[in-house]
Image (tube, helix red, strand yellow):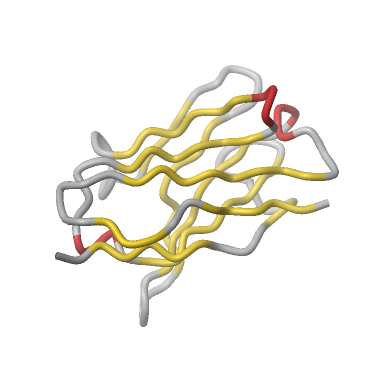
Length: 118
């Protein structure tokens, strides 16, 4: 049972990246799934979350209007579309799953590095 985040890399300010959180060993459709990030020298920050039953989404103020979370249950994957990237978005992004937002600590996966730089 695991979650795997992927899709990170180097992004330019104002550019876009799409992260994927793929579940194995369980159906992500049965859980709320969300994204965290941790920048060097800073604490972990909740970025976004999507519930399972009603599909309601939530975002940190720092990414609201720029990031979009969605899920493809057929692919057992949750996506984080990151637009209008800023250097302060640089962090390791990881995902978690749980019964409902923001309680997404039942399953937790290794992260993917996102670096935003010109």
